[in-house]
Amino acid sequence: MLFQWDVGQHPPEQVIATFLAPRKLDSGTEEFARSLFEGAARETQSLDALLRTQAEHWRLERMAAVDRNILRLSLYELLHVPENPHAVVLDEALELARRFSTVNSVSFINGVLDGILKARAGAKLEEGAKPSKPA
Image (cartoon, rainbow, N blue to C red; front, side, top):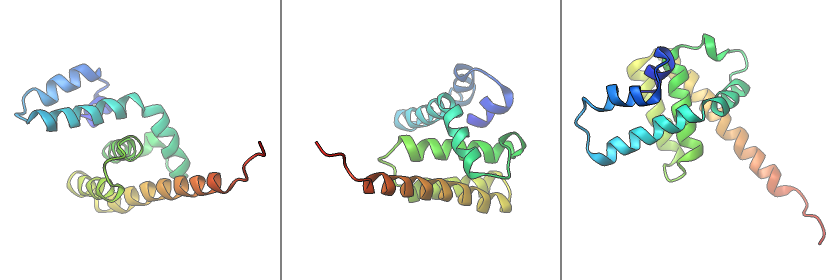
């Protein structure tokens, strides 16, 4: 859905209608897919900003559309769906890349997502190490 939204420039409601409606998904799966798509589409600007900082020599516009949207989807899930373990989200991103993109995309996506997670973990450690202000 995210790929269709990005490449086709269709409104989210149209993407949902054309992608989900013909499929016979159970309500939980459909709700989860819809929430990931809507969240990633809504947060694209902030997700892209993070991706730009990590993918230093890659402009988002020059990335393969499949890779760009796997990164957006996975990053949204990593940042906004805390109940899903990071290792599972990363594994699913790599499986999507294996299935829909190229062999080189797997290591690229893994490197970008891993770099963002490490940078955020380092920032949290630094934040926790700051001395507290006296009361």
